[in-house]
Length: 171
Image (cartoon, rainbow, N blue to C red; front, side, top):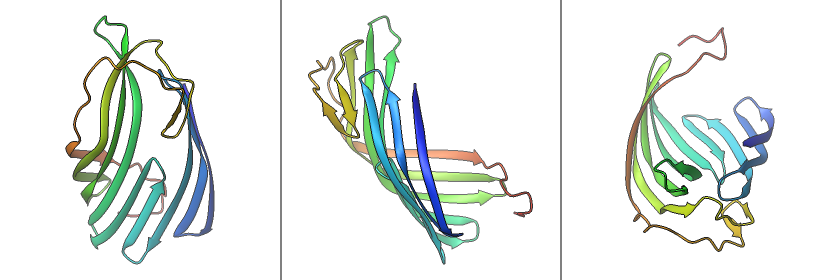
């Protein structure tokens, strides 16, 4: 079970900032991540961030095409469903560039970059630490059951449908 609470302040239509926290009772321990973010649209530049989770700095090179630099910090856990009574903790920080092409309400995106600090570690269910505040893990004495993955390249594509949020807005 988890949740996200954000407070947003918009002094201008093209600028806002927000702060809050993300909390999750993950398989490894309760985790709280303080979040500070901004949104800024100026000329053809757009910055969207919710640090330390993600940040994107983009430039509109054409009305339908945006180039951007992106960072995503990922930390999740999953039950391993192979009868081993274990769970996996995924930690990966992805840095790279993307190209986004808008086609009406659809957006096609290609991302290429590098995964830094990558680990996919498995632990016995119940092997936990006390608490995590962002990347700081308190009393982490867990026993790793596998070898870590190496850092390496990341490539992905996506196709997204965006629901209209302003009925008066035309594409």
